Length: 106
Image (cartoon, rainbow, N blue to C red; front, top):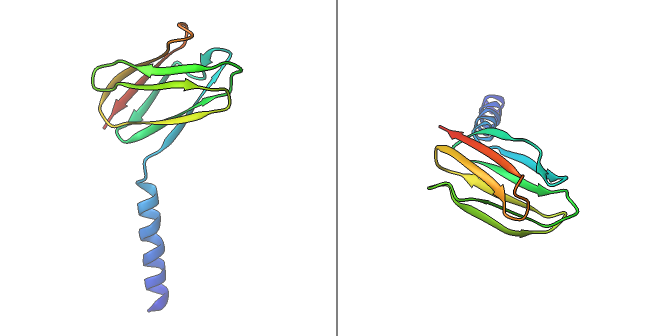
């Protein structure tokens, strides 16, 4: 009986872990994002990692999906959760060629 309870607890923990939202890395290097597009589900997040030698200002002004990581120094990382469906255009105000589209669905 104890073995059954133990395996039931392990299965429940695995099920909970399997439903946890994912965190996807996007690296900033050579004044570019590591990807031009990424698809996420609502509640998932992106960890913006500045692997560049310069400061970045990552933001989105897409209605309902606005955010701003003000001054992100070299070596810093910041996580943004995307909780609404839609497509966010992500830019860097310091480096206008940097552009990332985040497609969020249920």
